Length: 223
Image (cartoon, rainbow, N blue to C red; front, side):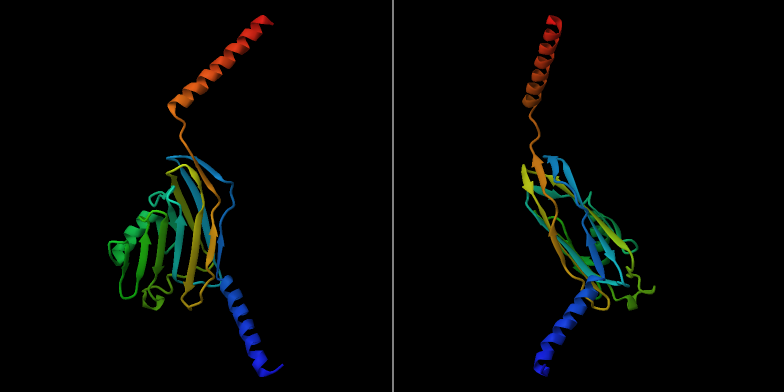
């Protein structure tokens, strides 16, 4: 094999090894579940668990959701738990981030060593991304070390219109050694939103049950 032929092979092997290494840095689990059946005005939940391994020191990352406006994201009910980094509802996380960076009207902000975007107000879209300071600039040794830790996200959506919907997600992260973990992309299981029965429907149902009961009593007397 000539050196010309070897170069693409070596490049492919290097890419393969780096991909395997990157995949070992972060894992994503989305617990399986059946399709959700919710009434208009009720909520459905989806969860994501992110497992960090191999000394992953979190430098930056982002979560991006897209969905039909028949669903409404609920930031005050949705929670994010990154252990020592930050935890709370999405609304609380955005408020905390606002205090650390100079925010603009879109819920994003930045300083010389820190930036974030926490946007939940656009219909059908959620964006949460953060770039953390260099650990060398922090008073404690590597405060963003995520080795062996699990970050948990609970995402809550309100059924706004009747229909069947999916939620698409994209999740990415970068370690402080500039190792790019793979971007995880997929969809949550179907969320079916059904209409709230009208009062007349309840009346019709109760009337039918009463008629069935009366018929059953009449047959019992005849027997």
